[in-house]
Image (cartoon, rainbow over all chains, first blue to last red; front, top):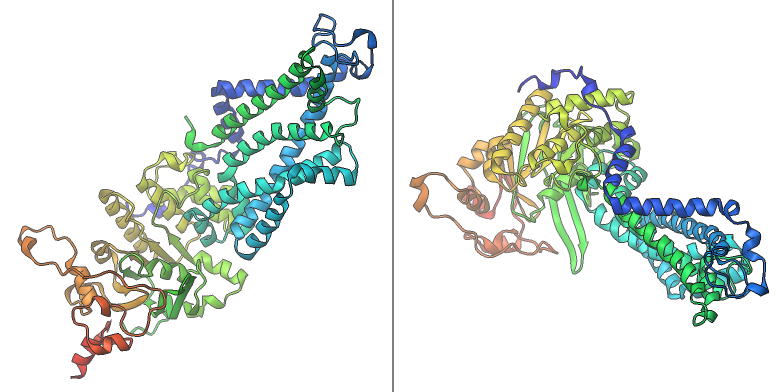
Length: 299
Length: 325
């Protein structure tokens, strides 16, 4: 065994960092999870429908009032039926998807990014910073989030962007708390100490060693957040602080249908189904992605 | 050991106290050790005696409360960030638990190459890769494991990854923090032999922390015995095993299992009682409460750490008075 140190590494080709292949690897593992694949397919389907909504049904159909055809049952012409003003419910769901999905994804991702950065720094650095930030967030979460979102929207005025800001800001504290607790556990591991012994900078430790080990928590919470946020946006619209009518949005479609629940249940059923399916697809896909990202579960 | 050369590592009055509820925990208290180049210093003691803390304080993973750590005669504790970064390359650590000491989300080659990338010790990626391969050969890891994730490997191979990572920056001094105590006995021997081979080949200096006395005898040139943050005895490996002076050392040595039928009926000195609290310890010998030979002075004053035989240091009042009387 002596002289090992001198046995020069001429055959470098034996060993290659598989960085480039990592995405392929994740995809290969994701493909094995049929449920996750179905989720991904459904999510893509929703997104494509939302993007090409205008081509499928023009926006005018979603907002044109037609008093002669109120509360029609689903027919060939109006496959989801019509609402109390005689508007095509399918068109409204389709165009509502644009608003709802954008709000859901944008806010969930913004929350995840801001929340992980704050949570990771606070959890890793600890000490006084941790105390100050966490107490500040405690104060923050003492205000009911919907009230806070309402206040933000009231101050800034309605509109998609302002709603996104309001929802993101209110959901950051919860996310920070989750990330922080995950990071606290990871920061104690010896491999983090090894990083410090090797002179790794704090930023690199956080983003290359700590957060990748918390990625499961991040993904599961982010996907759960998407549907949560669609619903929060719906509540805001219901209170008249969200999307301005007549522009459709899933949440407000559900609440509009509420008045006709006895006579025309399809008004609630279809947009409700949209929300259910979208959140289901996203969370199933999220679970699959989490497993695919974890090398320990590799098969 | 009267050599004029500057020792590679020297601590002077090194202290590390932790603030805990109820006072200060004296984990490492006034420790003075010297490790000459290319030698191995074994540090033994029971759990909680501060040996791990000592190892981390020396390479400044924990900031010592006071005292000095001299690396080639320079006080590392006075180094600023940049200088410390350079010094870290020369002082590495091998951890006890091969399961928690390597990042489960990185492949073997990424783990080994990480420090080289962080410190930019190789001019490019390819050079880092080549060195990674070389290191894997050095520590006896088959090259086919390069792209494997750690969870697929057993404890011994994982520990080899940890060793390769520690070697990646070409250190001169390595703190081995119980590197074999989490491994199977058969693998322990492999890893110990590897560490000793590496010492010969690369001219490494080790501080070998363990509670396993048979291991420490095998690998160390010099041994210090710690008890509650204090060094109670120091001697060369052979001398300590043949001629232990301190009552604690004697008890420790008698507890080593001997695979010999003749030894079956030999009485074992069992230390009575439990370790006293390291929180706000008063003055006096820290072993006094459990010592069979305790005298009045032991409870009042801390014994002097003094040379009883050439190169054999003990801190014990009983021996001290014997010497005088």
